[in-house]
Image (cartoon, rainbow over all chains, first blue to last red; front, side):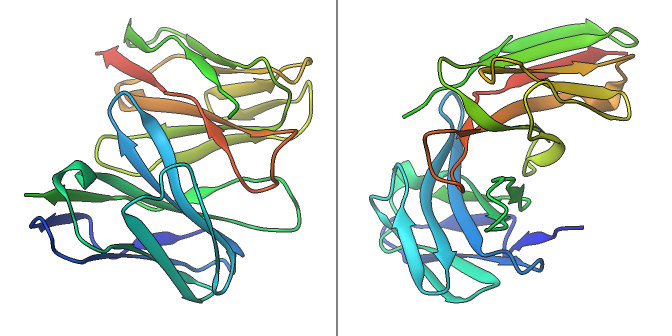
Amino acid sequence: DVKVTQSSRYLVKRTGEKVFLECVQDMDHENMFWYRQDPGLGLRLIYFSYDVKMKEKGDIPEGYSVSREKKERFSLILESASTNQTSMYLCASSIQGSGLGTQYFGPGTRLTVL
Amino acid sequence: GQQLNQSPQSMFIQEGEDVSMNCTSSSIFNTWLWYKQDPGEGPVLLIALYKAGELTSNGRLTAQFGITRKDSFLNISASIPSDVGIYFCAGRWSGGSNYKLTFGKGTLLTVNP
């Protein structure tokens, strides 16, 4: 079974803090993704990575950065957290090459910024 | 970007009833996926469809990849209380990248025991 894990299920941070969200997958997937999920807005893609050290902006990259130093690990960084970044953050991974696009999700991190 | 229209937005049914939901688009998709999300959890893949006309089952769940490649359906038979959750469709647009997905807004299912 594909397993995607996220470092924290719940996080509470203060405005202005630097926040790191970590994601690890154990299936040797090339692609990894970060989404945020908000009521009424659905899933929105923040960033994705198709290889180590490679990244591309998604639909809402402002206020976020990412790091992928190893194939299995993809980090989302909030340089200076703001209250409008309170959300559910979901990491996903998928295999490349087959081109089928099926993504597998982690359990999510519920981030609250005070 | 491409949009998926998922309906209904919510359903309230009695235990034992069958459920149908669907996703439609004006664009052609090469892959259709159905996920379920429990409260506070990440989406879990239920069924993946890769070919037009394909009909695939997973227990009491059945999903179909529409012949026009612009829609997909998910049916749940004999619903039980643990079916409660949000069901999402997702698709890989034929004119887009191989790795990006478009997501529907979800169908919230409530099952009354």
